[in-house]
Image (cartoon, rainbow, N blue to C red; front, side):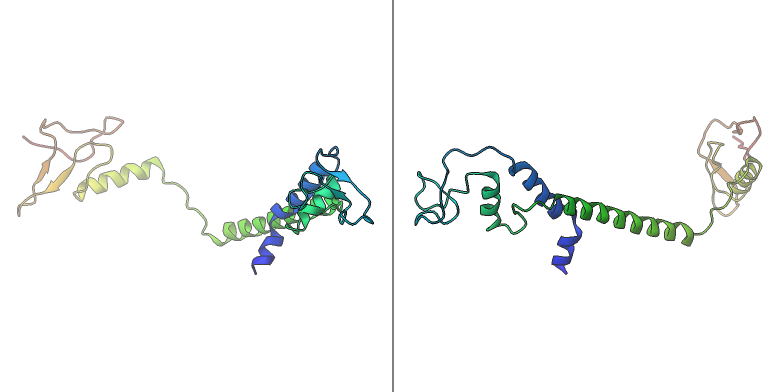
Amino acid sequence: PFRLACYATPLGWTTTSLMYVVMIDTPEYDGAEPCDESQSFCDRGFYCPDDPTGQQCYGYSGAQILDSVGKSYSIISSENNVARDMGIVIALGVVFRFLYFIQLRQRCYSSAEPKAPATKKGAKKGAKESAKNGASAPQGGTSTKKSGSNGSKESSKESGIESGGSNGESNGVSETA
């Protein structure tokens, strides 16, 4: 499962191509010398006179360096697979976009249809009804609550003025001082 996820991500495919494009046409590196593989000290087609063990010597040309690093990291190689890798990245993008559209369509059509918004006339009527029932009026600015057993309403404002709506209409709550 984890390896499958690695194949499905574009990072590995782009890294392979990026390393190839950057390294393949680089000029020859100092410190490494080409040699004939028939010589006893030359087993990779190059050697480094300053590094007799060959552990810090990766190559003379870009292709040799890619092959040397490829022994430690299997995705790096001197083979030109740029077209294949870019084709795979584009195909992954198309597949993921297609799956996104399927999920988007499924979510859009599986949800309930939205209801039409309430009209202004219905909103005023709702505010008047809530004021009659003892709830606070949204536009009036006064909050009412029932007090004691006699059912009279007290206001949070002490001014004793009737609060009106936006058209100067009363919201149905009047106060007496």
